[in-house]
Length: 439
Ligand code: SF4
Ligand code: SF4
Image (cartoon, rainbow, N blue to C red; front, side, top):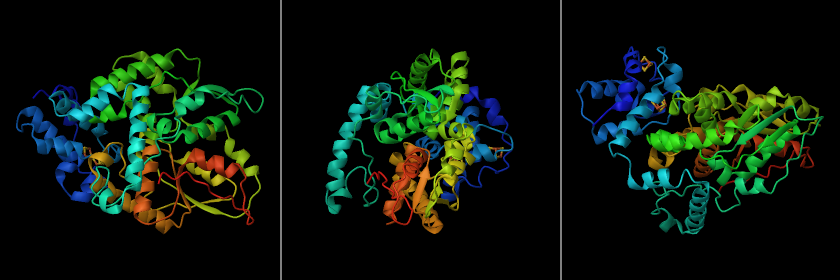
């Protein structure tokens, strides 16, 4: 088997000083205490593969697959090795050697790059979830999406997607004396298909802050599912389409509300399109919507709203937002500034929730164990609502809380801001949460 992609990063592998700093906080290592599930162990395997000391095997493939791409090891590494990029390279070599399953390959290559096909698959999945959600417990436990006999939370996929909703939507215009900026919104597939209201709320809040927002219909998936699975050709195809879509637009920024999309576009895109200046230019324009709202000072407007009772809100840091894009203070600034909201910090707010895109489908048992930690932390915080900024985390947290028997809604920051500023108040001065729970 060729190790073309790993070989290109040989210099990075050699930088490892085997200090083990990457083990502390690595969810897969701390779950197993298996050296080969830590970054150090994986780098050692990579070196052995390149030197011919080890031959590729299903066990090695499984070890590289058992990773949440949570970036904790990247953050900890004193040698500044982009370990997650190295794991991706190893998976790309394995995929090139035929290590990707036929169903995954079909979906990644023939569905993901085509929004209409993806929407069709989402609707089919939505129909299947009706059956799954209504099946008797005795039957549901044997269905594919079930995890060890427990029923899982399903996304709401039968609603109209964001892409078609915005087609018939006229921008609200700049609310206060002309547009401060012109931006384009990149929603990402999950927001488009499962959380369209969140996408609308993001656009409305930017417009309220005086920003002109465009939703380019030519946008496609950010490429994360293909990239992390090692399907570099599909990731490149998607990157090219997105560059073509956004390159000619007269906008100052590309706003994202999904942490993984943001991290992909701002960090992975230039790697995928090595040497393409348009990719670097696009990457530099990517900004998280919460960061932009704080830059525009919207929290000062919230503070003017009348106070009242308190709704306790906690926040989960998506890995790709905090460690991937360096955004963690801004969501907290927004939440704390909202009327009738009391922010409470949970223990391990930045610990991976275990969703991690396809990880929750490929490794449901491990994913559920990481989810359990989060559910306990939420319970101990005493929060009434959990807020996050990644649709994948949102679904995973809703699932974890529901399995733990906790009736705590999970929503995005955009939804909380919309709800808290809409002034739906009860007699005690509290606004009534009307969360859209994907249950
Ligand atoms: S922290 Fe970095 S240098 Fe240290 S063992 Fe891990 S990968 Fe190697
Ligand atoms: S990305 Fe996260 S799960 Fe994967 S090796 Fe690094 S710390 Fe562990």
